[in-house]
Length: 526
Ligand SMILES: [Zn+2]
Ligand SMILES: [Zn+2]
Ligand SMILES: [Zn+2]
Ligand SMILES: [Zn+2]
Image (cartoon, rainbow, N blue to C red; front, side, top):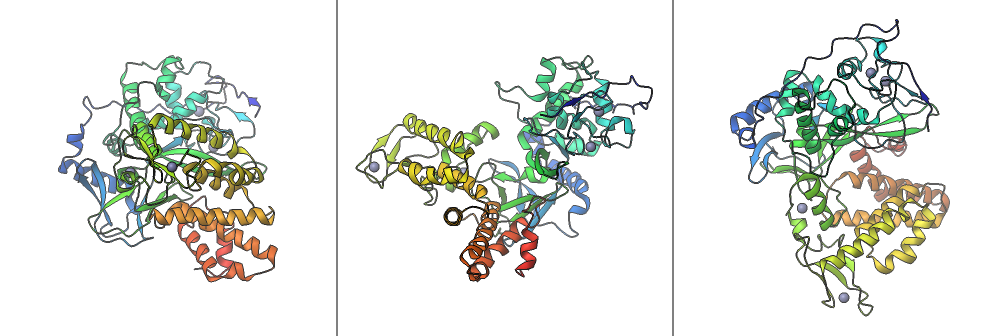
Protein backbone atom coordinates (compact mmCIF):
# COMPACT_ATOMS: atom_id res chain seq x y z
CA UNK A 1 0.00 0.00 0.00
CA UNK A 2 1.19 3.47 -0.77
CA UNK A 3 1.67 5.98 2.02
CA UNK A 4 -0.68 8.84 2.23
CA UNK A 5 0.81 12.28 1.82
CA UNK A 6 -1.54 15.06 2.61
CA UNK A 7 -0.80 18.08 0.56
CA UNK A 8 -2.86 20.48 2.57
CA UNK A 9 -6.23 21.54 1.34
CA UNK A 10 -8.16 23.99 -0.62
CA UNK A 11 -7.36 27.61 -0.90
CA UNK A 12 -5.50 27.86 2.43
CA UNK A 13 -1.89 28.44 1.32
CA UNK A 14 -0.79 31.84 0.14
CA UNK A 15 1.07 30.22 -2.78
CA UNK A 16 -2.12 28.75 -4.27
CA UNK A 17 -3.05 30.75 -7.35
CA UNK A 18 -6.56 32.02 -7.81
CA UNK A 19 -8.72 29.19 -9.09
CA UNK A 20 -10.10 29.44 -12.59
CA UNK A 21 -13.82 30.02 -12.50
CA UNK A 22 -15.84 26.82 -12.31
CA UNK A 23 -17.53 25.97 -15.60
CA UNK A 24 -20.97 27.44 -15.97
CA UNK A 25 -23.83 25.36 -14.69
CA UNK A 26 -25.09 22.96 -17.32
CA UNK A 27 -28.75 22.20 -17.56
CA UNK A 28 -30.51 19.43 -19.32
CA UNK A 29 -33.12 20.43 -21.81
CA UNK A 30 -36.54 20.28 -20.13
CA UNK A 31 -37.34 17.18 -22.13
CA UNK A 32 -34.74 14.69 -23.29
CA UNK A 33 -35.29 13.42 -26.83
CA UNK A 34 -37.29 10.20 -26.94
CA UNK A 35 -36.17 7.30 -29.15
CA UNK A 36 -38.76 8.30 -31.75
CA UNK A 37 -37.22 11.82 -31.87
CA UNK A 38 -33.71 10.37 -32.10
CA UNK A 39 -34.64 7.93 -34.83
CA UNK A 40 -36.31 10.53 -37.04
CA UNK A 41 -34.32 10.68 -40.31
CA UNK A 42 -33.76 14.48 -40.03
CA UNK A 43 -32.47 14.04 -36.52
CA UNK A 44 -30.18 11.22 -37.60
CA UNK A 45 -28.79 13.44 -40.39
CA UNK A 46 -28.06 16.37 -38.06
CA UNK A 47 -26.58 13.99 -35.49
CA UNK A 48 -24.26 12.58 -38.16
CA UNK A 49 -23.15 16.10 -39.14
CA UNK A 50 -22.25 16.89 -35.54
CA UNK A 51 -20.42 13.60 -35.21
CA UNK A 52 -18.40 14.15 -38.40
CA UNK A 53 -17.49 17.60 -37.12
CA UNK A 54 -16.38 16.08 -33.82
CA UNK A 55 -14.29 13.41 -35.60
CA UNK A 56 -12.63 15.99 -37.89
CA UNK A 57 -9.42 14.63 -39.45
CA UNK A 58 -10.12 11.12 -38.20
CA UNK A 59 -12.53 10.71 -41.11
CA UNK A 60 -10.50 10.38 -44.32
CA UNK A 61 -11.43 12.65 -47.24
CA UNK A 62 -14.27 11.36 -49.40
CA UNK A 63 -17.22 9.32 -48.26
CA UNK A 64 -16.58 7.12 -45.24
CA UNK A 65 -17.39 3.39 -45.69
CA UNK A 66 -20.06 3.69 -42.96
CA UNK A 67 -23.32 5.52 -42.51
CA UNK A 68 -25.80 5.78 -39.66
CA UNK A 69 -28.87 3.78 -40.56
CA UNK A 70 -32.13 2.82 -38.89
CA UNK A 71 -32.77 -0.84 -38.27
CA UNK A 72 -35.96 -2.56 -37.29
CA UNK A 73 -35.72 -3.69 -33.68
CA UNK A 74 -32.41 -1.90 -33.12
CA UNK A 75 -32.96 1.82 -33.69
CA UNK A 76 -29.82 3.47 -35.01
CA UNK A 77 -26.87 1.43 -36.19
CA UNK A 78 -23.97 1.56 -38.62
CA UNK A 79 -24.14 0.17 -42.10
CA UNK A 80 -21.53 -0.34 -44.80
CA UNK A 81 -21.86 2.09 -47.72
CA UNK A 82 -19.64 -0.14 -49.89
CA UNK A 83 -18.06 -3.57 -49.72
CA UNK A 84 -15.41 -3.63 -47.03
CA UNK A 85 -12.59 -6.19 -47.27
CA UNK A 86 -11.39 -8.22 -44.33
CA UNK A 87 -8.74 -6.35 -42.29
CA UNK A 88 -9.74 -3.04 -43.86
CA UNK A 89 -9.95 -0.06 -41.51
CA UNK A 90 -13.65 0.83 -41.09
CA UNK A 91 -13.26 3.90 -38.91
CA UNK A 92 -11.20 5.59 -36.21
CA UNK A 93 -13.03 7.12 -33.27
CA UNK A 94 -11.80 9.20 -30.36
CA UNK A 95 -13.33 9.30 -26.89
CA UNK A 96 -15.72 12.17 -26.31
CA UNK A 97 -15.41 11.38 -22.59
CA UNK A 98 -12.73 9.28 -20.89
CA UNK A 99 -11.64 8.70 -17.32
CA UNK A 100 -11.45 6.25 -14.45
CA UNK A 101 -13.80 3.30 -14.24
CA UNK A 102 -16.12 2.75 -11.28
CA UNK A 103 -14.10 -0.09 -9.79
CA UNK A 104 -11.21 -0.66 -7.48
CA UNK A 105 -7.68 0.00 -8.75
CA UNK A 106 -4.56 -1.75 -7.52
CA UNK A 107 -2.21 1.16 -8.10
CA UNK A 108 -2.55 4.84 -7.35
CA UNK A 109 -2.29 7.02 -10.41
CA UNK A 110 -2.75 10.67 -11.30
CA UNK A 111 -6.47 11.15 -11.93
CA UNK A 112 -5.59 13.47 -14.79
CA UNK A 113 -2.65 11.97 -16.75
CA UNK A 114 -2.57 8.44 -15.25
CA UNK A 115 1.08 8.63 -14.19
CA UNK A 116 1.65 6.20 -11.34
CA UNK A 117 2.35 7.84 -8.01
CA UNK A 118 4.59 6.01 -5.56
CA UNK A 119 2.95 7.91 -2.73
CA UNK A 120 -0.53 9.25 -2.80
CA UNK A 121 -0.37 12.99 -3.41
CA UNK A 122 -3.61 14.81 -3.11
CA UNK A 123 -4.38 17.75 -5.32
CA UNK A 124 -3.73 21.06 -3.56
CA UNK A 125 -7.04 22.34 -4.94
CA UNK A 126 -8.90 20.22 -2.38
CA UNK A 127 -10.78 18.07 -4.92
CA UNK A 128 -9.73 14.96 -2.95
CA UNK A 129 -8.18 13.29 -6.01
CA UNK A 130 -4.64 11.90 -6.40
CA UNK A 131 -2.79 14.22 -8.77
CA UNK A 132 0.83 14.33 -9.93
CA UNK A 133 2.91 17.48 -9.52
CA UNK A 134 2.55 18.30 -13.24
CA UNK A 135 -1.24 18.20 -13.19
CA UNK A 136 -1.81 19.69 -9.74
CA UNK A 137 -4.35 22.50 -9.49
CA UNK A 138 -1.55 24.72 -8.18
CA UNK A 139 0.11 24.63 -11.64
CA UNK A 140 -2.60 27.02 -12.82
CA UNK A 141 -5.13 27.13 -15.62
CA UNK A 142 -2.82 25.34 -18.06
CA UNK A 143 -3.09 22.15 -16.01
CA UNK A 144 -5.44 19.70 -17.74
CA UNK A 145 -6.99 19.10 -14.33
CA UNK A 146 -7.71 22.78 -13.56
CA UNK A 147 -11.25 22.98 -14.92
CA UNK A 148 -12.57 19.76 -13.39
CA UNK A 149 -10.88 20.64 -10.11
CA UNK A 150 -12.53 24.09 -10.06
CA UNK A 151 -15.88 22.43 -10.69
CA UNK A 152 -15.44 19.94 -7.84
CA UNK A 153 -14.26 22.80 -5.60
CA UNK A 154 -17.43 24.74 -6.41
CA UNK A 155 -19.43 21.90 -4.85
CA UNK A 156 -17.36 22.33 -1.66
CA UNK A 157 -16.08 18.85 -0.83
CA UNK A 158 -16.19 17.85 2.82
CA UNK A 159 -12.98 16.39 4.34
CA UNK A 160 -11.03 18.15 1.62
CA UNK A 161 -7.65 16.87 2.90
CA UNK A 162 -8.52 13.19 2.43
CA UNK A 163 -8.44 10.94 -0.61
CA UNK A 164 -11.85 9.95 -1.93
CA UNK A 165 -12.05 6.99 -4.25
CA UNK A 166 -15.74 7.68 -4.77
CA UNK A 167 -14.96 11.06 -6.31
CA UNK A 168 -12.37 9.31 -8.51
CA UNK A 169 -15.01 6.82 -9.64
CA UNK A 170 -17.39 9.67 -10.50
CA UNK A 171 -14.74 11.69 -12.35
CA UNK A 172 -15.63 10.45 -15.85
CA UNK A 173 -19.25 11.51 -15.31
CA UNK A 174 -18.12 14.80 -13.74
CA UNK A 175 -16.13 15.48 -16.93
CA UNK A 176 -19.48 15.56 -18.70
CA UNK A 177 -19.78 19.18 -17.44
CA UNK A 178 -16.66 20.19 -19.35
CA UNK A 179 -17.96 19.16 -22.76
CA UNK A 180 -18.32 21.83 -25.43
CA UNK A 181 -21.84 22.64 -26.54
CA UNK A 182 -21.49 20.49 -29.67
CA UNK A 183 -20.09 17.54 -27.76
CA UNK A 184 -22.78 17.81 -25.10
CA UNK A 185 -25.41 17.78 -27.80
CA UNK A 186 -23.87 14.61 -29.25
CA UNK A 187 -23.69 12.88 -25.88
CA UNK A 188 -27.29 13.77 -24.99
CA UNK A 189 -28.46 12.20 -28.24
CA UNK A 190 -27.13 8.84 -27.08
CA UNK A 191 -29.52 6.49 -25.36
CA UNK A 192 -29.10 6.32 -21.59
CA UNK A 193 -30.94 3.54 -19.78
CA UNK A 194 -31.85 4.24 -16.16
CA UNK A 195 -29.86 2.07 -13.72
CA UNK A 196 -31.39 -1.11 -12.37
CA UNK A 197 -33.07 -0.68 -8.99
CA UNK A 198 -30.45 -2.58 -7.00
CA UNK A 199 -27.60 -0.55 -8.47
CA UNK A 200 -26.11 2.47 -6.69
CA UNK A 201 -24.41 4.62 -9.31
CA UNK A 202 -21.33 6.72 -8.62
CA UNK A 203 -23.37 9.91 -8.38
CA UNK A 204 -26.00 8.41 -6.05
CA UNK A 205 -23.19 7.26 -3.76
CA UNK A 206 -21.74 10.78 -3.57
CA UNK A 207 -25.18 12.18 -2.77
CA UNK A 208 -26.14 9.48 -0.30
CA UNK A 209 -22.93 9.83 1.68
CA UNK A 210 -23.01 13.63 1.57
CA UNK A 211 -19.61 14.31 -0.04
CA UNK A 212 -20.32 17.95 -0.82
CA UNK A 213 -21.74 20.93 1.05
CA UNK A 214 -22.95 22.53 -2.10
CA UNK A 215 -24.42 19.95 -4.46
CA UNK A 216 -28.19 19.92 -4.51
CA UNK A 217 -29.47 16.39 -5.10
CA UNK A 218 -32.64 17.81 -6.66
CA UNK A 219 -30.86 20.51 -8.68
CA UNK A 220 -30.14 20.77 -12.41
CA UNK A 221 -26.47 19.76 -12.10
CA UNK A 222 -27.35 16.43 -10.55
CA UNK A 223 -30.10 15.87 -13.09
CA UNK A 224 -27.58 16.43 -15.86
CA UNK A 225 -24.97 14.20 -14.27
CA UNK A 226 -27.46 11.38 -13.82
CA UNK A 227 -28.10 11.44 -17.56
CA UNK A 228 -24.34 11.37 -18.25
CA UNK A 229 -24.06 8.35 -15.93
CA UNK A 230 -26.87 6.61 -17.82
CA UNK A 231 -25.27 7.34 -21.19
CA UNK A 232 -21.91 6.05 -19.95
CA UNK A 233 -23.43 2.92 -18.45
CA UNK A 234 -25.27 2.20 -21.67
CA UNK A 235 -22.51 3.00 -24.15
CA UNK A 236 -19.01 3.21 -22.67
CA UNK A 237 -16.16 0.92 -23.67
CA UNK A 238 -13.40 -0.37 -21.48
CA UNK A 239 -10.08 0.98 -22.65
CA UNK A 240 -6.71 1.18 -20.94
CA UNK A 241 -3.37 2.85 -20.72
CA UNK A 242 -0.10 1.01 -20.04
CA UNK A 243 1.84 3.11 -17.56
CA UNK A 244 5.31 2.37 -16.15
CA UNK A 245 5.93 2.93 -12.45
CA UNK A 246 9.20 4.32 -11.08
CA UNK A 247 10.76 0.83 -11.07
CA UNK A 248 9.85 0.58 -14.75
CA UNK A 249 7.21 -2.10 -14.20
CA UNK A 250 4.27 -1.72 -16.53
CA UNK A 251 0.75 -1.48 -15.18
CA UNK A 252 -2.43 -1.49 -17.16
CA UNK A 253 -4.78 1.23 -15.95
CA UNK A 254 -8.29 0.34 -17.04
CA UNK A 255 -10.35 3.36 -18.04
CA UNK A 256 -13.75 3.84 -19.52
CA UNK A 257 -14.31 5.81 -22.65
CA UNK A 258 -17.37 6.98 -24.50
CA UNK A 259 -16.78 6.36 -28.21
CA UNK A 260 -19.85 7.51 -30.08
CA UNK A 261 -19.23 5.85 -33.43
CA UNK A 262 -18.11 2.72 -31.61
CA UNK A 263 -21.27 2.74 -29.50
CA UNK A 264 -23.50 3.12 -32.55
CA UNK A 265 -22.53 -0.38 -33.69
CA UNK A 266 -25.23 -2.82 -32.68
CA UNK A 267 -24.55 -6.21 -31.16
CA UNK A 268 -24.17 -9.60 -32.78
CA UNK A 269 -22.63 -12.72 -31.23
CA UNK A 270 -20.83 -13.19 -34.54
CA UNK A 271 -19.56 -9.67 -35.25
CA UNK A 272 -17.90 -8.47 -38.44
CA UNK A 273 -15.41 -6.09 -36.82
CA UNK A 274 -12.61 -6.08 -34.27
CA UNK A 275 -11.13 -3.06 -32.54
CA UNK A 276 -8.02 -1.96 -30.72
CA UNK A 277 -7.11 1.25 -28.91
CA UNK A 278 -3.94 2.99 -30.06
CA UNK A 279 -1.48 4.86 -27.83
CA UNK A 280 -3.71 7.98 -27.91
CA UNK A 281 -6.76 5.96 -26.80
CA UNK A 282 -8.28 6.24 -30.26
CA UNK A 283 -10.47 3.31 -31.19
CA UNK A 284 -9.46 1.69 -34.47
CA UNK A 285 -12.13 -0.56 -35.95
CA UNK A 286 -11.26 -3.10 -38.67
CA UNK A 287 -13.36 -5.58 -40.59
CA UNK A 288 -12.78 -9.03 -39.10
CA UNK A 289 -14.83 -10.59 -41.92
CA UNK A 290 -15.77 -9.21 -45.32
CA UNK A 291 -18.73 -6.80 -45.01
CA UNK A 292 -21.01 -6.29 -47.97
CA UNK A 293 -22.47 -2.97 -49.04
CA UNK A 294 -25.69 -2.32 -47.10
CA UNK A 295 -24.86 -4.87 -44.40
CA UNK A 296 -24.99 -3.78 -40.79
CA UNK A 297 -21.61 -3.23 -39.09
CA UNK A 298 -21.87 -5.18 -35.85
CA UNK A 299 -19.75 -5.60 -32.77
CA UNK A 300 -19.93 -8.11 -29.93
CA UNK A 301 -20.93 -6.62 -26.55
CA UNK A 302 -20.28 -9.83 -24.65
CA UNK A 303 -17.40 -12.30 -24.31
CA UNK A 304 -16.96 -14.25 -27.51
CA UNK A 305 -15.82 -17.44 -25.81
CA UNK A 306 -18.72 -17.60 -23.38
CA UNK A 307 -21.51 -20.10 -23.96
CA UNK A 308 -24.89 -18.85 -25.13
CA UNK A 309 -26.63 -18.94 -21.76
CA UNK A 310 -23.90 -16.85 -20.17
CA UNK A 311 -23.94 -14.36 -23.02
CA UNK A 312 -27.72 -14.06 -22.89
CA UNK A 313 -27.77 -13.40 -19.15
CA UNK A 314 -24.91 -10.90 -19.45
CA UNK A 315 -26.55 -9.01 -22.33
CA UNK A 316 -29.89 -9.03 -20.60
CA UNK A 317 -28.53 -7.58 -17.34
CA UNK A 318 -25.94 -5.18 -18.68
CA UNK A 319 -27.51 -4.09 -21.96
CA UNK A 320 -31.22 -4.76 -21.52
CA UNK A 321 -31.83 -6.91 -24.55
CA UNK A 322 -32.13 -10.51 -25.65
CA UNK A 323 -30.00 -11.63 -28.56
CA UNK A 324 -31.42 -14.18 -30.94
CA UNK A 325 -28.73 -14.31 -33.61
CA UNK A 326 -27.85 -17.52 -35.47
CA UNK A 327 -25.18 -18.44 -32.96
CA UNK A 328 -27.60 -18.00 -30.05
CA UNK A 329 -30.21 -20.17 -31.75
CA UNK A 330 -27.81 -23.07 -32.39
CA UNK A 331 -27.50 -25.27 -29.25
CA UNK A 332 -24.06 -26.52 -30.36
CA UNK A 333 -22.85 -23.00 -31.24
CA UNK A 334 -21.51 -24.06 -34.64
CA UNK A 335 -20.20 -27.31 -33.22
CA UNK A 336 -17.97 -25.65 -30.62
CA UNK A 337 -20.04 -26.87 -27.64
CA UNK A 338 -18.84 -23.86 -25.61
CA UNK A 339 -21.87 -23.96 -23.33
CA UNK A 340 -22.40 -27.73 -23.34
CA UNK A 341 -21.96 -29.93 -20.25
CA UNK A 342 -20.72 -33.49 -20.00
CA UNK A 343 -23.49 -36.05 -19.65
CA UNK A 344 -23.79 -37.09 -16.01
CA UNK A 345 -24.57 -40.75 -16.80
CA UNK A 346 -21.49 -42.89 -16.26
CA UNK A 347 -22.58 -45.18 -19.07
CA UNK A 348 -22.53 -42.22 -21.48
CA UNK A 349 -18.94 -40.91 -21.56
CA UNK A 350 -19.32 -39.21 -24.94
CA UNK A 351 -22.67 -37.57 -24.25
CA UNK A 352 -23.13 -33.80 -24.24
CA UNK A 353 -25.93 -31.99 -22.46
CA UNK A 354 -27.34 -29.08 -24.42
CA UNK A 355 -30.21 -26.69 -23.82
CA UNK A 356 -33.16 -27.72 -25.99
CA UNK A 357 -34.03 -24.05 -26.57
CA UNK A 358 -30.87 -22.03 -25.93
CA UNK A 359 -32.77 -18.73 -26.16
CA UNK A 360 -34.71 -19.57 -23.02
CA UNK A 361 -32.91 -19.43 -19.69
CA UNK A 362 -35.46 -21.90 -18.31
CA UNK A 363 -34.93 -24.43 -21.11
CA UNK A 364 -34.66 -28.15 -20.38
CA UNK A 365 -31.26 -29.69 -21.22
CA UNK A 366 -30.89 -32.96 -23.09
CA UNK A 367 -28.02 -35.35 -23.79
CA UNK A 368 -27.23 -35.66 -27.49
CA UNK A 369 -26.37 -39.37 -27.07
CA UNK A 370 -28.57 -40.99 -24.45
CA UNK A 371 -31.44 -38.47 -24.38
CA UNK A 372 -31.12 -37.95 -20.62
CA UNK A 373 -33.04 -34.82 -19.63
CA UNK A 374 -31.94 -32.36 -17.00
CA UNK A 375 -33.88 -29.38 -15.73
CA UNK A 376 -32.40 -25.94 -16.00
CA UNK A 377 -31.89 -25.55 -12.25
CA UNK A 378 -29.59 -28.53 -12.11
CA UNK A 379 -27.69 -27.50 -15.25
CA UNK A 380 -27.23 -24.01 -13.82
CA UNK A 381 -25.97 -25.51 -10.57
CA UNK A 382 -23.31 -27.57 -12.39
CA UNK A 383 -22.18 -24.48 -14.27
CA UNK A 384 -22.06 -22.48 -11.07
CA UNK A 385 -19.89 -25.08 -9.35
CA UNK A 386 -17.59 -25.36 -12.38
CA UNK A 387 -17.38 -21.59 -12.59
CA UNK A 388 -16.53 -21.25 -8.92
CA UNK A 389 -13.89 -23.97 -8.97
CA UNK A 390 -12.19 -22.56 -12.01
CA UNK A 391 -12.66 -18.83 -11.86
CA UNK A 392 -12.23 -18.42 -8.09
CA UNK A 393 -9.55 -21.00 -7.56
CA UNK A 394 -7.66 -22.73 -10.36
CA UNK A 395 -7.22 -19.64 -12.48
CA UNK A 396 -5.12 -17.95 -9.80
CA UNK A 397 -2.61 -20.81 -9.49
CA UNK A 398 0.66 -21.30 -11.36
CA UNK A 399 0.90 -22.85 -14.82
CA UNK A 400 2.05 -26.23 -13.53
CA UNK A 401 -1.01 -26.52 -11.30
CA UNK A 402 -3.38 -25.38 -14.04
CA UNK A 403 -2.06 -27.95 -16.51
CA UNK A 404 -2.40 -30.78 -13.98
CA UNK A 405 -5.84 -29.55 -13.11
CA UNK A 406 -6.92 -29.50 -16.74
CA UNK A 407 -5.51 -32.96 -17.44
CA UNK A 408 -6.48 -34.84 -14.30
CA UNK A 409 -9.52 -33.13 -13.00
CA UNK A 410 -11.46 -30.86 -15.25
CA UNK A 411 -11.70 -33.10 -18.24
CA UNK A 412 -13.35 -35.75 -16.14
CA UNK A 413 -16.43 -33.61 -15.68
CA UNK A 414 -16.19 -30.79 -18.24
CA UNK A 415 -15.85 -30.95 -21.99
CA UNK A 416 -12.51 -29.88 -23.51
CA UNK A 417 -14.11 -26.85 -25.17
CA UNK A 418 -16.56 -25.92 -22.42
CA UNK A 419 -16.29 -22.18 -21.79
CA UNK A 420 -14.72 -22.68 -18.37
CA UNK A 421 -12.12 -25.08 -19.74
CA UNK A 422 -11.37 -22.57 -22.48
CA UNK A 423 -11.08 -19.75 -19.96
CA UNK A 424 -8.60 -21.76 -17.92
CA UNK A 425 -6.60 -22.65 -21.02
CA UNK A 426 -6.41 -18.97 -21.97
CA UNK A 427 -5.08 -18.25 -18.52
CA UNK A 428 -2.49 -21.03 -18.87
CA UNK A 429 -1.41 -19.58 -22.23
CA UNK A 430 -0.70 -16.25 -20.52
CA UNK A 431 1.18 -17.89 -17.65
CA UNK A 432 3.38 -20.32 -19.58
CA UNK A 433 6.33 -18.09 -20.41
CA UNK A 434 9.50 -19.00 -22.32
CA UNK A 435 11.33 -20.10 -19.15
CA UNK A 436 8.90 -22.96 -18.46
CA UNK A 437 9.81 -26.62 -19.13
CA UNK A 438 9.35 -28.17 -22.55
CA UNK A 439 6.27 -30.18 -21.55
CA UNK A 440 4.44 -27.01 -20.48
CA UNK A 441 5.33 -25.25 -23.71
CA UNK A 442 3.93 -28.21 -25.62
CA UNK A 443 0.67 -27.88 -23.68
CA UNK A 444 0.57 -24.18 -24.43
CA UNK A 445 1.01 -24.84 -28.14
CA UNK A 446 -1.85 -27.34 -27.98
CA UNK A 447 -4.17 -24.94 -26.13
CA UNK A 448 -3.49 -22.19 -28.69
CA UNK A 449 -4.38 -24.53 -31.53
CA UNK A 450 -7.53 -25.78 -29.78
CA UNK A 451 -8.88 -22.30 -29.17
CA UNK A 452 -7.96 -21.14 -32.67
CA UNK A 453 -10.01 -24.09 -33.86
CA UNK A 454 -13.00 -22.93 -31.77
CA UNK A 455 -12.71 -19.46 -33.34
CA UNK A 456 -12.54 -20.98 -36.82
CA UNK A 457 -15.68 -23.05 -36.17
CA UNK A 458 -17.49 -19.92 -35.00
CA UNK A 459 -16.34 -18.29 -38.24
CA UNK A 460 -15.00 -15.40 -36.24
CA UNK A 461 -12.58 -14.31 -38.92
CA UNK A 462 -9.69 -12.03 -38.08
CA UNK A 463 -10.84 -11.22 -34.53
CA UNK A 464 -8.77 -9.78 -31.70
CA UNK A 465 -8.42 -13.03 -29.73
CA UNK A 466 -7.09 -14.69 -32.87
CA UNK A 467 -4.30 -12.11 -32.95
CA UNK A 468 -3.40 -12.83 -29.32
CA UNK A 469 -3.39 -16.60 -29.89
CA UNK A 470 -1.34 -16.36 -33.09
CA UNK A 471 1.25 -14.27 -31.26
CA UNK A 472 1.43 -16.73 -28.36
CA UNK A 473 1.64 -19.68 -30.73
CA UNK A 474 4.45 -18.06 -32.70
CA UNK A 475 6.61 -17.17 -29.69
CA UNK A 476 6.04 -20.61 -28.16
CA UNK A 477 7.23 -22.29 -31.32
CA UNK A 478 10.30 -20.06 -31.41
CA UNK A 479 11.09 -21.15 -27.85
CA UNK A 480 10.45 -24.80 -28.70
CA UNK A 481 12.73 -24.47 -31.72
CA UNK A 482 15.52 -23.26 -29.44
CA UNK A 483 14.99 -26.03 -26.88
CA UNK A 484 14.81 -28.76 -29.50
CA UNK A 485 17.59 -27.27 -31.60
CA UNK A 486 15.35 -27.29 -34.64
CA UNK A 487 15.25 -23.78 -35.98
CA UNK A 488 12.94 -24.92 -38.79
CA UNK A 489 9.96 -24.93 -36.41
CA UNK A 490 10.22 -21.18 -35.98
CA UNK A 491 10.71 -20.25 -39.62
CA UNK A 492 8.27 -22.77 -41.04
CA UNK A 493 5.89 -20.96 -43.42
CA UNK A 494 2.78 -21.76 -41.39
CA UNK A 495 4.42 -20.41 -38.26
CA UNK A 496 5.47 -17.20 -40.00
CA UNK A 497 1.83 -16.90 -41.05
CA UNK A 498 0.89 -16.82 -37.35
CA UNK A 499 3.27 -13.91 -36.85
CA UNK A 500 1.84 -12.11 -39.87
CA UNK A 501 -1.70 -12.51 -38.51
CA UNK A 502 -0.62 -11.36 -35.04
CA UNK A 503 1.00 -8.26 -36.50
CA UNK A 504 -2.00 -7.48 -38.68
CA UNK A 505 -4.37 -7.66 -35.73
CA UNK A 506 -2.30 -6.41 -32.79
CA UNK A 507 0.12 -4.08 -34.58
CA UNK A 508 -2.12 -0.97 -34.35
CA UNK A 509 -2.82 -1.53 -30.64
CA UNK A 510 -1.20 0.73 -28.05
CA UNK A 511 -1.00 -2.34 -25.79
CA UNK A 512 0.52 -4.79 -28.25
CA UNK A 513 3.17 -7.23 -26.94
CA UNK A 514 6.44 -5.38 -26.48
CA UNK A 515 8.52 -7.67 -28.69
CA UNK A 516 6.02 -7.92 -31.53
CA UNK A 517 7.57 -5.28 -33.76
CA UNK A 518 11.05 -6.66 -33.15
CA UNK A 519 9.88 -10.12 -34.19
CA UNK A 520 8.30 -8.73 -37.32
CA UNK A 521 11.61 -7.10 -38.29
CA UNK A 522 13.67 -10.15 -37.33
CA UNK A 523 11.57 -12.57 -39.34
CA UNK A 524 11.06 -10.22 -42.26
CA UNK A 525 7.26 -9.98 -42.08
CA UNK A 526 5.66 -7.04 -43.85
ZN1 LIG B 1 -0.75 13.97 -13.90
ZN1 LIG C 1 -7.82 18.97 -8.00
ZN1 LIG D 1 -26.50 -13.85 -30.19
ZN1 LIG E 1 -25.92 -39.07 -22.06
